[in-house]
Image: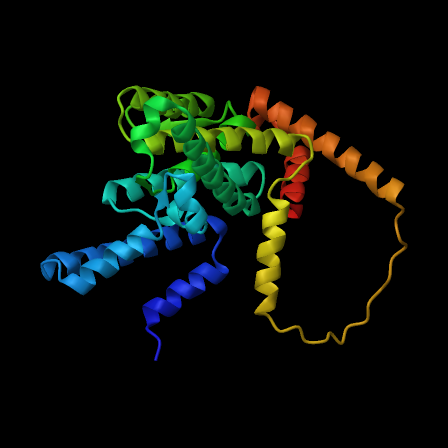
Length: 302
């Protein structure tokens, strides 16, 4: 018989929004690893169990070596859901929640998971590339890397790119524009590089930041980089769904020509771009009710 807690978590993952799903998966992996490490400590590092824990962590962490990743290609995804330290996952999840809420408000919630994954992958590849070709980083070759920071940084920069003048209320400081928050986060990464503090992680953050910026620039041009990933998830989801035949009659509409469809899409995108430019210059509050409704409807289609 399944545990009510396990069933509740499954229900949250299936029906929750993308932000909730990401947080639940990250926290669940962290708790499993933490429980195993606690048991390992209490048993005094018992041989077989010790080997199992090290094997598990070693196979979900990203090895900073192109040679190693050939044998563990899945780690380019699993590393971004893996945390070892409490404060590491705490701050990552807090930042993920705050900035995902902002980004989903001005695009759509369906952008969050694809951007998180793309940011994590970009962070991994940039880190592997720089550690391989830059001599000063060679001592870090082969070391393991974990954490959601690259994906989270992608979301932070994406939010700051689409609404740079959005104001966040920071404790002890007050309202601060989102662009300044993002620049401060990036500045910390650069300064930590100079201090040789978590070099792999900081390089990954910069890779994630680049992906977040590119993602929104493409989005503004009408190119949605999340489409392929969302289609894949929809395909996976449909495999586990039954599809009973509908008894409802279908009303067929006149088929729209390609030229007419493309023209309508172009007009719609021009309206959205104009609204986004207005938000960037004057803030969300400056929009009229009609403009907010257009933006809301467009977000629901993504």
